[in-house]
Length: 427
Image 1: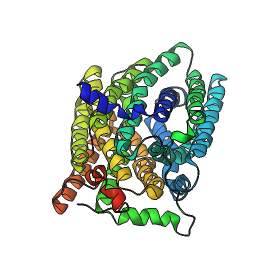
Image 2: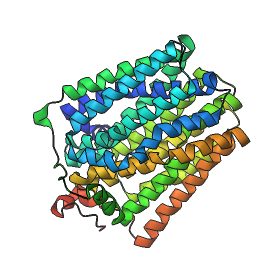
Image 3: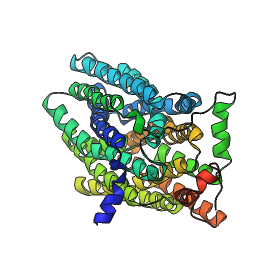
């Protein structure tokens, strides 16, 4: 147990990573509070319990991941990532504060929430690939899988606190204060960026300025059968299986007839699963393709259990199962894609990953909301079941076709990636 604990948290030995992880945890709590408050504002204040409107809000917030894809990854690879994060995090802080002021003043309208969701999504589209690639500068290459997993642990640990805190705050003083708290929480991550020790960084080579830089990332991903398979799986799960804001809010209001506090508790129950999944990933020495298959298969089972859950608490338990499976899939795909990609291309590959995983939300979220309004949220969750089954099938077909479930990740641990210049070859 002591050995596992030391392995699972080994990235915390680096001062810069500890600082970054602490600031991110505070900011992530605020971000989860905003997510809950935004959905609750749209569902219960600005509309007559319209899951479709929540779906539109979600779609607008994640559409920039795909719309801005030609630039987000290229910016992450070419420019100073620390300075970029200061800009993106600062922008999101200002947007959260402005939305909070409008809401507290009682003058916010639905179209304004749509505008803020889209603007927040634009900042997040530039932030996400930079943030994921930046972790590689805080730890040594051999500890990157662990750092990626601990990042997810931080994000999902915040999910344990943020939704429940948002529920109490909304019930106690009003929705707008959750936005203001989120704006204030960005101070922690901005401070951590400013206080990093430059001499302890592990800088990577920046991408050269040349024509076709954006296309280079797509060409690289397309040349790798394993990455192509992962991208298809990410599209299926991200587009049709990650509509939890719609499912959970609709189930809370329409099926279990609970308030903001009950909605927040359900989100926190799912976070128990996602934190567990993150910690399991952190304890692994390396990711394998079979983890993607297992994660998607269990994800489908968890969604099926959630869809038929007869009461509030069994629904919450099913969400925890979904959380473990989802984080197993997401962490493994993240680590595999980063470890098997040369550093000068990582920003673009991570942008493609985020664009596919989240950029499909404008398609999936409105569909999930419409199905929830027309036939009920249980049928909407059924879409997630189908997505998990199809994604698991893609993984199984890849593994059968190539007769090798493991990718270059094991070679990376042995040091072969550096020797071979980061080729996307299976072994």
